[in-house]
Image (cartoon, rainbow, N blue to C red; front, side, top):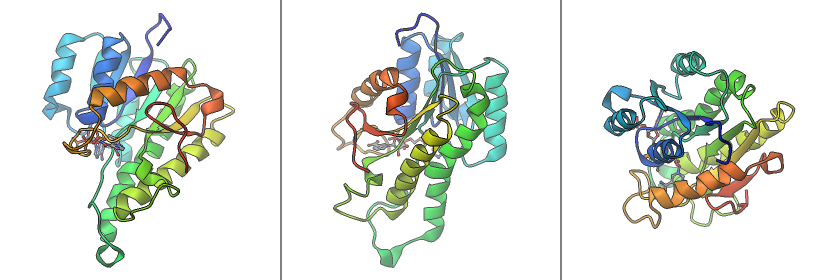
Length: 238
Ligand SMILES: NC(=O)c1ccc[n+]([C@@H]2O[C@H](COP(=O)([O-])OP(=O)(O)OC[C@H]3O[C@@H](n4cnc5c(N)ncnc54)[C@H](OP(=O)(O)O)[C@@H]3O)[C@@H](O)[C@H]2O)c1
C-alpha cells in the first residue's frame, strides 16, 4: 500500500491458513484489519496478533453461511469505521477430493456451495454500504484454478470445482453490477499453498502466496475488475 492513511481491510476465514497470513501481513504494513472467523474464542493465532496490534486488529465472529452472523459482523465493523478499502472473501471449504459421478454426495456439494459461492456473495452484499464509502474499494474473491473450466483436465472434486467456477461467474457479475459504484471485483487463485486445505506437498508457503497477492491487490484498478488472476497477477483462463 502506498497511501499514508491506513487502509481498512476485512478478511473472512481469518483464523488459519491464507486468511491468517493476510491478517499478519496487512498488520505488518500498519493497515486497519477486521479479522472475521467462525470462532474467535478458539483462534489463538489471532489472539496473539491482537496482543501485538491492539489498535489495528479487531477480531469478530462471522460464519459466511449465516445471514444473521454476517449482518452482525457488518454492524460491528460499521460501528468502528465509516468505510472499507478491501474485502477479502477468503473462507473456503473443499469437500471430498477426487470422486466420480457415481459417488456424488449432493448434501456435501450444497454445503460447499454455501461457503465458497454464496458466502462471498452474502458477505459482499452485506458490506456494500462500507465498500461504497471506501477509497478505491476492492472485493477480492479467493477462488481456485480448480474452478477453471478451460484448465480442467483431470475431473473429480465436483463440489470444489463447481463452487469455484460459480464463484468466478459471481465475481464477473459483481464487477458489472458494481461498476457504477466504482467497486473493483476480482477472482484470485492463490496458487497451491501449504495449508490445511493445500496439504504439506504444496509448493508455496502462505508467505509466498500472500505477499504476492498483496502486491496484486494494491495494483488493481478499474481495468482489472471482473478478471481472474493468479497470485502473481497473471490472467487465468475461465
Ligand atoms: N491452499 C491452497 O492450495 C488453495 C488453492 C486454491 C485456492 N485456495 C482457496 O484459498 C482460501 C483459503 O484456503 P486455505 O488454504 O487457507 O484453507 P484452510 O486452511 O482450510 O482455511 C479455510 C478457512 O475457511 C474458513 N471457513 C470454512 N467454512 C467457513 C464458514 N462457513 N464461515 C467462515 N469461515 C469458514 C475456515 O474456518 P474454520 O477454522 O472455522 O474451519 C478457515 O479459516 C479458500 O477459499 C480456498 O478455496 C486454497
